[in-house]
Length: 188
Ligand SMILES: CC(C)(COP(=O)(O)OP(=O)(O)OC[C@H]1O[C@@H](n2cnc3c(N)ncnc32)[C@H](O)[C@@H]1OP(=O)(O)O)[C@@H](O)C(=O)NCCC(=O)NCCS
Image 1: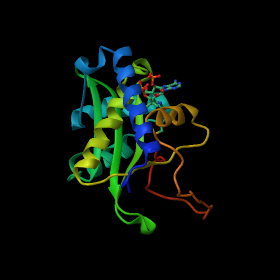
Image 2 (image 1 turned 120 degrees about the vertical axis):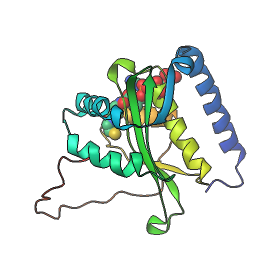
Image 3 (image 1 turned 45 degrees about the vertical axis):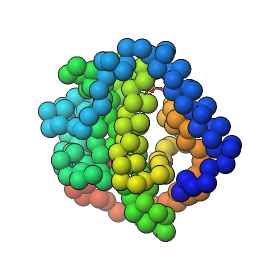
Image 4 (image 1 turned 120 degrees about the horizontal axis):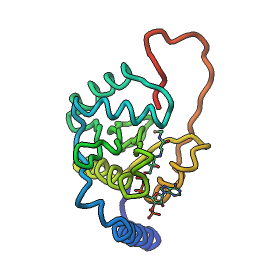
């Protein structure tokens, strides 16, 4: 939890604020043109297409489930947000508040973020992450977590630029065999 910040942390936050301000100067078109809002059913075809363009998988059923759970069913703790430029969806972020997982106080988890390759490096990813963090803060959450593939240097650079550093949790996994009928395509 963020309490009793040290001067090192304050300096880090100031540096991040300065970086964001520099980013806004470099991408002056973004604040006016781009809007981040909750996803709507009508956005789904664009979200599915965007995801497919990045992952190569067209996961319609998966996205309908995500929409039911995080879109309409969000209720303040689950968020599925899109960045729109006019009517065009240029990116999305999905996250949720997770309570007391393995003793950890409630924290905000981001488990998907994608920006249209044509719209990248214009501040959309920053705007999406900022918007979901704002929603987490509104329910008292002060810690943000995510998990990325160690090969995904692009996401790593992005999250580092936002101020994220290695956390104290370690991901563990093992192969437990068998099929997973009905679960459809894997999550991104
Ligand atoms: C990571 C991603 C969300 C960033 O979106 P974006 O809109 O380009 O991000 P921003 O413009 O807000 O960039 C913010 C900062 O991230 C870093 N960054 C973004 N793209 C970068 C790149 N290609 N190389 C290095 N740093 C990069 C920079 O520090 C940048 O700040 P700057 O522009 O002031 O230098 C986007 O590239 C993406 O969707 N990548 C694919 C993600 C993915 O693999 N998703 C599937 C798993 S969920």
